[in-house]
Length: 267
Image (cartoon, rainbow, N blue to C red; front, side):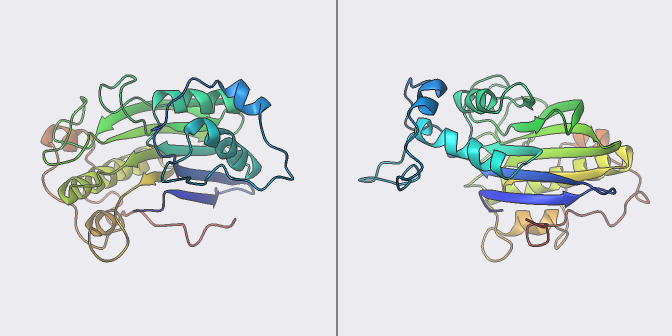
């Protein structure tokens, strides 16, 4: 996969930088009723050895033990926007509470397009980014409705948002490819590349893809990564109506691919 957590500091065509992050949160598999306020009031002494990420007796730490540290890390690194994967609705709401009114988010649950199932949500600092438009599409044969690709383990979607930042257009897309079906990953990468090229042509601005690809740069299951970075061609099985909607002329950005910036972005 494109690592479950990455931080990118990306230079816009100006003196400032846009800092982006992506984080697979691990879904809330140990749900409890502990509110965010209780987690904040019961933080351990900073002199104590942290154990919030530890696994004890084969049991992972619940989200209520992890959420404050996730928000703390992102705030300390002064990110302007971030994408999360595997987030259930409670996790999305908790992060919104922890970041406060200066932040906003978009995203839906993958199972029903509302609140059921995991989100690939986008969060942003409203002082740094102004939302222009957003939508959701599924990486399947029926992209405009909650759906699962045949043979995939789960429905997979993309959260899209276009922003204005420092007078420039910035497009963010956040996703989580399937962990079982390589065909789904290949289709997903092809759809993302199609939509990214369309946005680059029509907005004239930068396009960034965040997420967990479940596809390494090399070796087994690397086809999704190879497609989106241009090492192999996209598949030709994209829904025809969707492909026509987001198609561009052959002479518009003809060599468009996504570039993996993880090794290049300043920290």
